[in-house]
Image 1 (tube, helix red, strand yellow):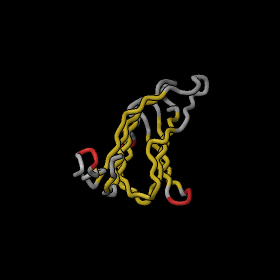
Image 2 (cartoon, helix red, strand yellow; image 1 turned 90 degrees about the horizontal axis):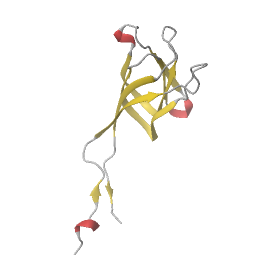
Image 3 (tube, rainbow, N blue to C red; image 1 turned 180 degrees about the horizontal axis):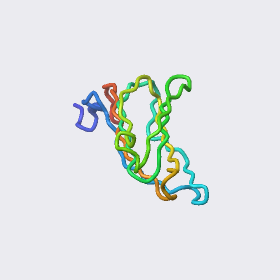
Image 4 (tube, rainbow, N blue to C red; image 1 turned 60 degrees about the horizontal axis):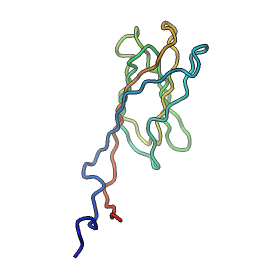
Length: 132
């Protein structure tokens, strides 16, 4: 008779998975105020995603959504003192394989830490994994 540790375990029972985080990045150099892009989400297959990303600090964001065969959609998200509707990107996107964010110096703010928060939700496949 199998013991509990040898029974298959469900990978997930919820049809939607979400990833959320708050990010704080120092620039690589305070002289030119540049940042390395962050790969915040990636999938081995194309997925439809729901994305919300907000600039919470003093610097703008460049958001790149990669679709099939390297086709990119690029969006800019502005930092304060921009109006609130320009500080957030929200939407549903189809066929995405990765999401990258790069901080960009705001023309009206001095060089400092770049901060933003995001939430990405996507449908996931249900399945079983057997424990070893």
